[in-house]
Length: 154
Image 1 (cartoon, rainbow, N blue to C red):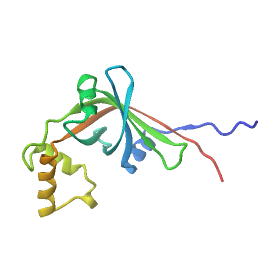
Image 2: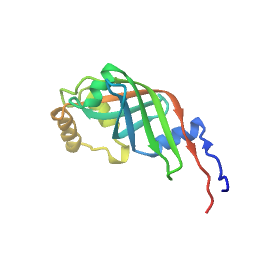
Image 3: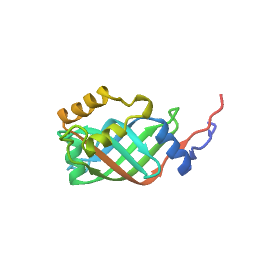
Image 4: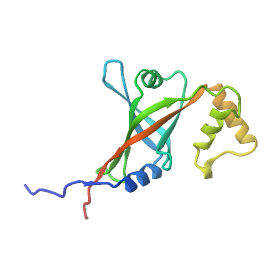
């Protein structure tokens, strides 16, 4: 059997670019038993601050996990099945947005890509919806990035 090419470790810059290019990943939190809890999440990557932000509702089990143990990781697939990035760190959970346009609501709004962000009446409706859904922001402060790619021709 012929040995194929080995995976190539991605640079910090390449990992950050991959995180910025994708929008969905798998968030891993730690259950009380020590087992991982995995959930697919829409996220926003702030490369300069090295923070991944997620929007979720206050009643989700992942928040219970993060409040008990803030260690978490986000796995993001690359453009093929052989490449990926993982962002690890400690998460903090905001308070619930309670008034349309409060600081948490504005942070939630800021997580939407600029070309998809609502404006005017749509923005007001968005902020009201976040309050009605009892939304919070999870901020994963990334202290470790890693991942690989496999270069295969053909």
